[in-house]
Length: 104
Image (cartoon, rainbow, N blue to C red):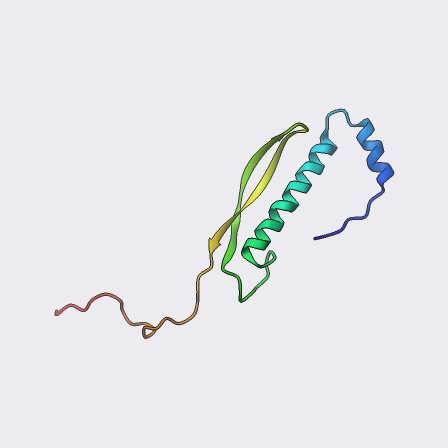
């Protein structure tokens, strides 16, 4: 997870002057999105764009999700996960047909 340094006094001043709640909504959105991404990384067993031998699923884009909070509506991106295809050779001969042979 990335750590961001920022001036807390500037954040406090913005909170005091922010009547529309945009800053709170942005903070809620950032927090929830970070939690969603962390959970997806745990399930997939790999960071975004990371190649791993133990990985059993992969990220397959995102879908939008609207979350309603006291601070207002927050648009989140929920990762789609797809089973990773195995590229290991199967027990059958490579290129052999699995259809039953026909007499003609």
